[in-house]
Amino acid sequence: MALLVQKYGGTSVGSVERIDLVAAKVAAARERGHQIVVVVSAMSGETDRLLKLARSVDPRPQPRELDQMLATGEQVTIALLAMALARRGVPARSYQGWQVAIQTDQAYSKARIRNIQTERLLADCKAGTVPVVAGFQGVDEAGNVTTLGRGGSDTTGVALAAALKADECQIYTDVDGVYTTDPRVEPKARRLDRITFEEMLELASLGSKVLQIRSVEFAGKYKVPLRVLSTFQEGPGTLITLEEHSMEEPLISGIAFNRDEAQLTVSGVPDRPGIAAAILGPIGEANIEVDMIVQNVGADGTTDFTFTVHRNDHERAVEIARRVAQELRAKGVRSAVDIVKVSLVGVGMRSHAGIAAKMFRVLAEEGINIRMISTSEIKISVVIEDKYLELSVRALHKAFDLAESRIV
Ligand code: ASP
Ligand code: MG
Image (cartoon, rainbow, N blue to C red; front, side):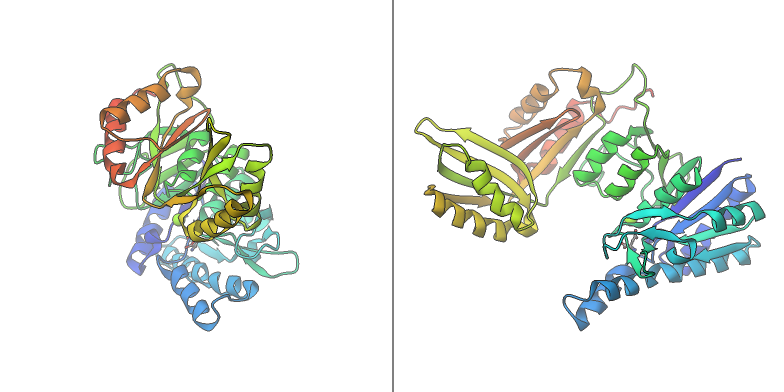
């Protein structure tokens, strides 16, 4: 018998029929002798609808009141699922965050979980009752309702699994696992049986939207075995674990890409100490996150300074860069939004040289120009023109044999 936390996402509870399907799955897992604690999201589209409603009253709603309202989406689905379970003869009780209690800090709309009281949930499990807990929400010290940020139900699931010392946290969603890359770009993309937390973290932060990044960090920190599976299709899904597997360790686990970046270049900057700080300081002060940074040394005592930001921050970043360029007497500022970042991810890179060279060769053979490169221990990213996204992903997927199934 295992204690499992099962989290069902918005599409899995998107209609009463689907909620009943979830109830059937929970009932079946219980039949197999497992203790189940369920976490659910709001019905798909509901959180967006509530957000729009709030913004129609005030474009910048009061954070406390916004969280108060957004938390209602999950309040509906927990109660509906508990009803559906009861109709199937499975005793169940729904809980909002504050009823558990899931205690958080006071940062509305991005609250962090501090502590989870497990007594009620454990008592339910012991009595054979299935607790159904609202994802995405908690309560601060003063009793205010808080929310954990978009996609936060994943984090609720993982945090509950950690607090309850569950055997596994199962994230049920509308895809049947984590893939080597986005199947919409490369139809030969393959589901991975396993992936490490580190790799998953890279893939998630590089734009694969299967799991909220914070939930993966949390799972890694507390060593919660995490599995991504489909609600609608039987299968083992993808297990996210600590272990780096056997000798068969693949070099590359996946290819991620991110279409949400913009590139800025401040050209002809006098090459002297303090330049990077002078350019990036004001960008950081404006709360704009910088991703990749490259500085070239010119022969004439000047340098070009290139960096990327989120596309939503593009215009603001250009404005700031122009101002700084003027102050520094730089030549000017160029920017591009027709770019994409493509990244290879794999813990196998640690012990193998030559992966970057192979990546660059593959791109060169396709006539794809690389505009920026950055590397870490388990990742190589390049910025290229966005029209080459599909071509580059497919060429790399083939060159690194990602379509071939492997032994784990
Ligand atoms: N309902 C929230 C959202 O849409 C939380 C979640 O689904 O994880 O972001
Ligand atoms: Mg989600």
